[in-house]
Length: 258
Image 1 (cartoon, helix red, strand yellow):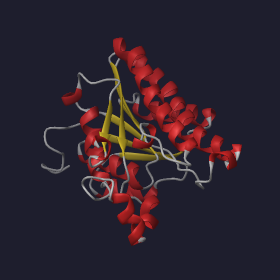
Image 2: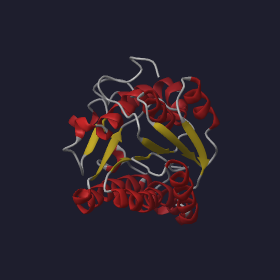
Image 3: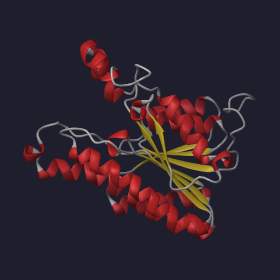
């Protein structure tokens, strides 16, 4: 790593950070940020995050990539065992893997299969990773977890009951685990972004009228950058946030301040 690559005084040399959903978008940005700050990075996604791995190795970072479906407990167990076999510990867990609803139909028309698909990944997947990686953190009596929630888990969005419920669940799961594990020197926090500039929102941003309609309700009049959320995640995982646990850090351009 070159001097100045790390953001400010935040550094993670000697730490192992696992990021789920690391193949693209926010997960990729978070993984790159940890690598720049000296952490060994475990990249996990439902498809092997080869591009993220290539970028990190290109800057001299240490990383491994693994394929996992976070909603499948057996796969989460296998992933945890594989990482612990290689690194002996996991200091930091970022639960970023998630998905949106395929369609925003009226709730009474939403298929049960679609509800279960979203809940299984966004909420159950976060729980399973916390459960099994948290067990290792308990054995080491230390660790930091950051769960990626959403402003939609705080205010709600019409015709998005599965997504909103899953992200609200993530926020309360975060609080529950923070209370349970505080005595074991494990901090558990969440970040709640609003709309971000990611591949998932590319269509929204390319439709000029849609983009204008959405940003009209954001005081900063734009979507957030993934780097802006990654910075919040780094802060929560650093010693600068050592007295923070059970919190949800909102990164939304002022949307919820209205």
